[in-house]
Image 1 (cartoon, helix red, strand yellow):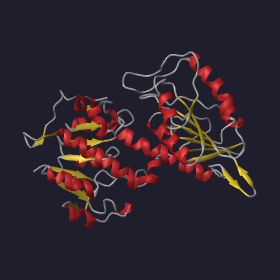
Image 2 (image 1 turned 60 degrees about the vertical axis):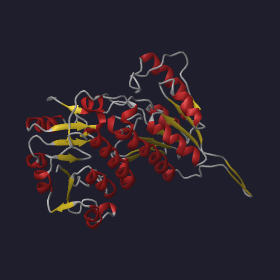
Image 3 (image 1 turned 60 degrees about the horizontal axis):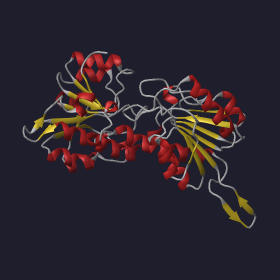
Image 4 (image 1 turned 45 degrees about the horizontal axis):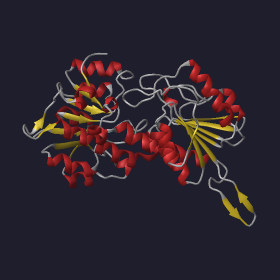
Length: 366
């Protein structure tokens, strides 16, 4: 019987977990034994008893779990101490950036650990149930709007009262990927007037289907990769986009920034001049802050006030939705493990002809 295990994350950085009580049953149905570190999810209100009742085995230390487990599920990469405990030739699955974790990845490869990063998952229909980037970005887009509204000192929806009419807030979303579309939907539900912009022409229909107005840079080609991600824009596009946004930014009360380019620094879209042109009391929430930021003045885990405009961004916004994010993440991980599992062999089978497996497996030192 294969042993699948998970240990606690560094709670100062990460509150999400990889295995929930709900997914324990799914793993045991595949004949896995599940090993967890004690107090694995007490910070989320999930007791060890709940895990035991579902069939998990609890151990006193991370070292014990890592030494015994053949498959390890994590959110973030292992620490150096954890690497020393992990079994040679085991399997590690999580949401790892192979380039920012280069040194750790290389140490694991030296131990013949097979590392799967779900950040590298191909965008194909069969992989949708494993798509951690989409499930987590969806929640991030929602939460960014909620946190912006909490900081905004005015009502969001239009209200007609005996004392007069309160106009609706105006929200601009930059980047209409998964996070951006959820931000649009959330802001609309709260009663805001919403507009959005994106370098991909396909985004226009998606934005308008949610009730948003699409701000398009005229006369440019579609900047979309074959995988559906945004390409880096040309200098000509950037100039036209800056001119478009220069007029739009100052009219909006809340701006949600979500624009990312895979493998590159986030594009700087909101300039210092644009921030200073906004109305006092306005909010910018930069979801791209960890990758350099879409907005001037954005820094991780800081609220910078410029001309009475608040510029915000969290290192890990999902820590503020850790239970919901964990439930979705754990399901994504189970679906990935299930794809690795061969019913014929009744064991893990790494079939590198499977696009999902081949694209997510980190096979060589970086």
